[in-house]
Length: 468
Image (cartoon, rainbow, N blue to C red):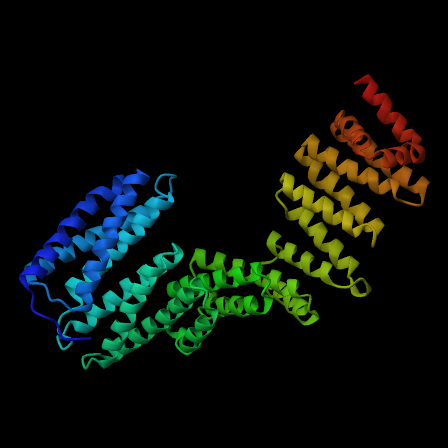
């Protein structure tokens, strides 16, 4: 970069105009709800971003007074953008307003850079100043990438590269400074991965990751969580495009990054991110259809089960894995055991009940007696205590359907009558409503089969319905 230049009269006026515009922007940002006026303001904002960036590239050196004014305005504008980003109501999250917030943050960064990073590289506080600017540039890059403002992200990454180069050449860096520079450089390359991905240049993202790989062990937990989230996003998009091999590569990178920090050092959000990455990794492994990947997914579920126990998400993963095994090695007992634990641990919802009914129904062709036992446990141990008649009705419909599919008619009749009698004793009229729903909800073939196979039960349902 060229040495800093002395201000001309024209440059002084330009700096004063920038300060005036930024002050006006600061006053308008909190109330910028009109999309049409935002468009005009955004156009003016982009013009000033170009003007400030040109001055930064020229290493224009403001006077101390102007520099102090610019720093104060930049700080207030940056903080206002942070405040606006944290708000989540409908108006503040509108696309035009969010873009305005992001671009305003780009301007705040450039004004700050103009006021702070253009001084002599040999000054004693140079390293501290540039490390601070480097942190701002990486933060801005992340915000811009998340908001798909690729121009802003590229601008901030260009500045970050310049800062790294200047820091490495400095003669005033301590051992601690050098470690900090390496950490920042790792984050820089990782953010370049994200930017390249957003630009559709996955080959460049791979190249940048190669450069970052040897440095990633230096980053702290909060940085690791942010970068892992970015890598997961890359993997998720690749999975949606069914590029399973590349999706696995980026999801494994995301997982390695968070796991390298140690669970005790991760934040609550970091732990949740870790589970989210595991979920997508398992889904991707299963989607490949590979026996090797299926076994890897199985191993992951065992590992997480050992860590956190019978959590619903772990049971869901285990069930997904088991159902991918071919029939000749399908473990019926393990499947039934998982479903039983799900019945006991799930907090039921309409969707959760539907899932259990579906999975128990899938088990029936392979293990009819196990499926019948699970259905009765679901009804008697989970649904009856809950008292939701609609849920009980849905479950009894499925239980009656199972009975109509059995070959041993007398045994099936006896078991079904026993269940209906238990319903009558436990909740009275609910068994009538549930049983009536079972018959009326069945298709005509199943209904006829039910009446022929179980005339006693059918007559009981019919008589009870007539009395009601």
